[in-house]
Image 1 (cartoon, rainbow, N blue to C red):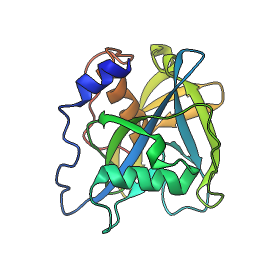
Image 2: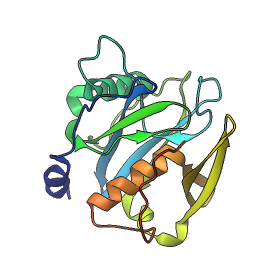
Image 3: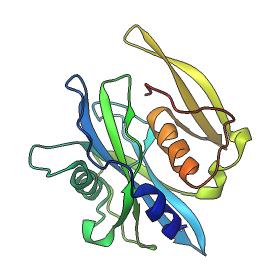
Image 4: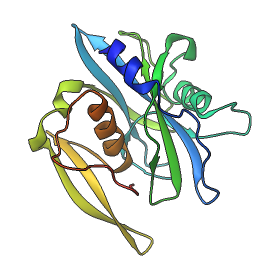
Length: 197
């Protein structure tokens, strides 16, 4: 899987220009192996952060002027949010940028991380960590589509549900893009949305 992702993500632009009306952001899609099974790490945001409160997301945030590129943004923000040393991350490549209805253009980077690891989540930004098996996202019955309204606008979004967990919006789109690179298509047809949240 790691070799496949390296090959398929190599051609993706890692730092394409961001339109002036959008805020550039970078996130890390942390991939690790537990008992030989691929897993992903997510964070649930606290209810005190500025945007996307309480949502399950990948670690990351807005690009700072001191960041040389969005890859650096993703690694810096991940370290700030969960205490993961950037030196411990093997970045496999970038995924397609996702634009949110709230005005962000998010560029995701898939990174292989060690497991187990002594994470130190920021209490201001992270309510909890979720470690979920990748295969759980292959099942089409866990995916649905819907409409999200924000600021007088409506946009199509995807939802993934399992037990009490719900992943939706931009994070769900990033997941679908990752699955497509792995040859998995849990939602029939075209699932590339132009604007998400």
